Length: 272
Image (cartoon, rainbow, N blue to C red; front, side):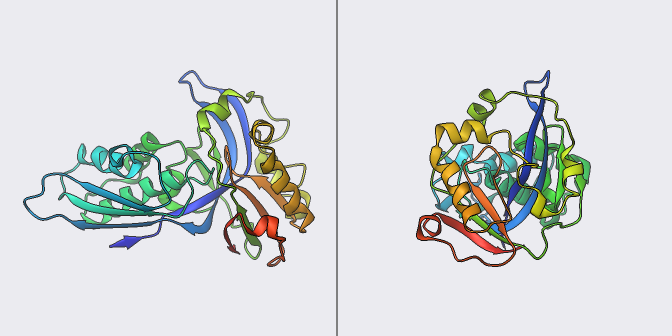
């Protein structure tokens, strides 16, 4: 069986507080996009006594045993018994890019195994296991536009406010450590909730909806700020860095004519 775990972008990201458990409280809007990995699995032969993961495509930089897909399978075996698997993960979503690729892979593995092997895990347990894999992982269980608070796991579904717009995602091949990004940002209560700002027309988001990670990321990697400026020069109605970086996206009214300095870094574009 083959599945296609989707990426997401963050529309706005505010770091609103530091939690006693060491995590941070945030406000953001998770929005699914068409960029995806490919995840396939088959049941192993009877004499095989362990799960096997093979990865192709973009290098994840980690051993198979440390991949979130394998960690999810191992964790799921603590709850239910099911056959050992041969798994193939083809990566098209860049790693360390603020697009949630690893979390999406883990959530996809979790829900398809639950369904295929009739493990009968309820939604609450699925989301609890997903949260162990990553703060944004529960979002990918349903993968519909959601306003997120807490660590990112408290989800409120919203309407697809970007339907009809055209999205361009740019990534210059830079990896940004999420932990380093948090260490270099200050938690601060916002003057207004992002939920209220989403009520504005998209054409009024510029300057109102921000990503608290941009200041750090743009100082360390000035090219990211340059790419954002170029997207605006190319008539994006809104542009922002996604997550803790390093992807930058532009939202357009229609498919744009982009200069070569942007086109060479495009990793996905299409309608929303």
